[in-house]
Image (cartoon, rainbow, N blue to C red; front, side, top):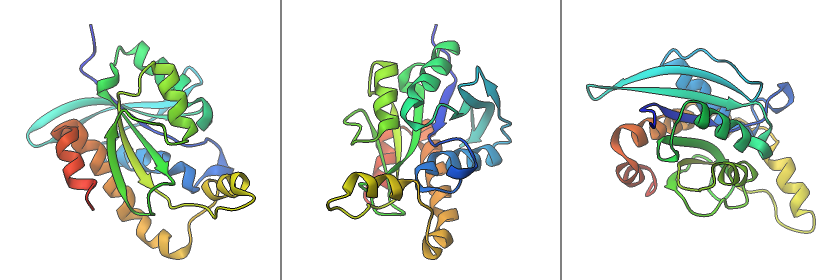
Length: 199
């Protein structure tokens, strides 16, 4: 019997050196959702920090789990699959929040299914769940310089911090990301796409 819980997962890398980097947009958004809905994180099998809460919006209450994988980005799927199996949460009740280099900083796109777009965390989740059919909140971080060292540039970019201008915009951007996750759950994917994808 599938659970009526939703699972929201913010992707990132654990540890001090990755805090506040572009690749940790998912963690930062998850932290904001935890603040909003008074979720307290505890360890889940060494694979993730996991908390449980209830959202009250539009006169409805929806129960959810909120997770931040501890597996490092490239193995995010292990954490997501473990939680979804343990609590019997189907992919159509999973929302993944992650950084996306194909979008300018500050832009958000919402989707379900489709390609991982080179994002190793998403590739890992697709493999572990056996399907790409879960909702994704793609948080734009802009792109590294192309050129001869494209791979190294990309790694340094996603593991880099934000400039002063972006830092100023970050609280609003994270709030939008948190709103998008809530909207998927309460209003459905299509309505959330109308609201965010055209911006």
